[in-house]
Amino acid sequence: MALTRAKPRQTAPRRALEPRPADSTRIPKDAAEFDFEVDGRSVRLTNLQKPFWPELDITKGDLLRYYVAVAPWLLPHLVDRAMVMKRYPDGAHGKFFFQKRAPQPHPNWLETCTIPHHAGPVEFAVVRDLASLLWVVNLGSIDLNPWYARCDDTDRPDYLHFDLDPVEGADFGLVCETALLVHEALDRLKFPNFAKTTGSRGIHVYVPIIRGPVQKEVWTFAKTLAQHLARLRPGLITAEYRIANRPKGRVLVDYNQNAWGRTLASVYSVRPKPRAPVSTPVTWAEVERGIQTEDFRLDNVPARLQRLGDLWQPLLQERGRVRLHKVV
Image (cartoon, rainbow, N blue to C red; front, side):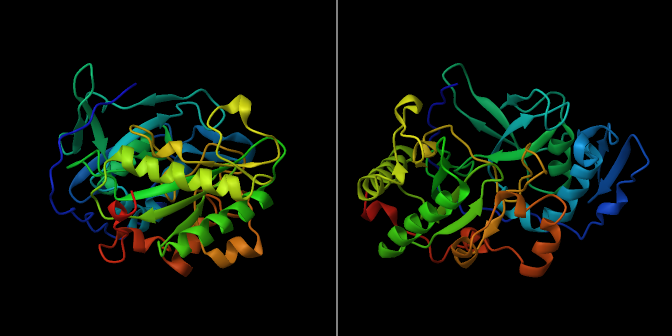
């Protein structure tokens, strides 16, 4: 559905509430339901034994335990952003539906973000702490899809990105090759840039920017760079928006995901794909050596975070962001 622009309001971003260290084993493996108590709030977790990846013996409870484990690194990337929920009530292989409006009833402590819409304002849920994270995931939200801009100014993003997606006939090695070309192009512009696996078939490349340009201007810059790269390497890259016109064996540098109202899976989101992959930050050295989506999964990403920390921490900092309006 088409969303209209919110009126700009310039306020300092709030920090995520510091999540208290939470032991994921607090969610019992032998219970059907459980009341998770955190920071004086209680979240009723339901259908914990329900298979979400039957072939992997992964249940809904396992998914919730994963999100408890990664919450200290995940939550700062979600705070102050509207959450578009993509709900899988029957697990990763079942039917799903999108839900933008925060379900009713919802806890009185759940924060919401109101965004204007042609048919009237839409009140989105906001994931700000462990309680709200578990409440959203308990609704069957396997992956998390936050808004690009913060709630105080939903038309002025604080990052731009490129979604690298293989067209039929292209493998993940070509996606990595394309990601490195995007990286080099952004480095030449002196734009800091960071990569993560999508958890599906591709790679996301993000650039932290200073809020200023509206969404359409951010989209225009991404389109210009994507089309430039496609002209430089037509045998590898396409920026063709129309699916039927995309040449096979290429990698799409998708700029259109920067458009108003679009979202991508958040960093550290589990994806509803085989092997329960996770959208995971990677270093450029790892991309150059060669990686695969399935290298990063629900069962091993928490340990990676314990070892390496949040490789996307720079996307949360005020310093080092690009003043994009100088080039748009």
